[in-house]
Image 1 (cartoon, rainbow, N blue to C red):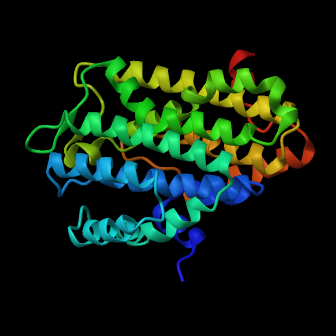
Image 2: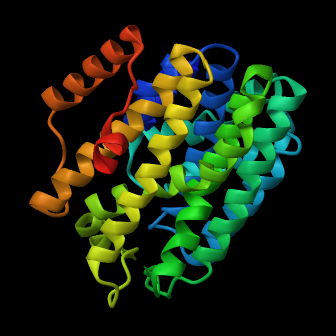
Length: 306
């Protein structure tokens, strides 16, 4: 029998650590949202497929979200796996379990299901637009800083917007900070995506994905990532000050803290640099301690302003 948590562990790193921190029913909603976005990501990254095949898969997947229990789900899932879009075993297993994931998605509350559906479809549509720009060799090159930001919005900014709406769902005490969170939600997603792009630049180039525009100084990208991470920090601290559940605050704090540490590491050592496992668990322990003691869970922004 398929298991959502096992699929999450096989297809994620940071989210496999942070999603279990969430309170229910948000945890289940975000788990399914992540898996659905990961399916869309798999089609966008399907280097073995020609451009038209990747676009068709994104369009088919978007339509399945309208009828998640239809017979077409099983048929398309089998076809996707048989055509091997990539080599990652976890992603292939997720494609194979698409009928299960969509059946679980159909069981969400009407409000949660609609939020996840609309934002996943927005991302799939945006991804198809960028895939359409790839050359016959499958290479995607982004032109300038705005093009990079547009791409980050499609693959991560929309995620930030969706997560924010899921956090606000059924949480009336957060209504007062809702506008503040919504203003920063896109930047939170952009921050995490920029850090990943800077970290994985060398590997992505080998795979035919040139997300860092060739004529754009890397210093500008680092500066933008820092600015966005400040917004992510402000977002997280606003949740904490508003009295959000510990798990909700931790879910947002952990990827922000890891992104700060990773950005410092890449700035020092270059693309491909990663924080150590020891550093990761040290960050988790310090985060938990700050939450338990009622201190700001991220000190970075305050320290920079001092």
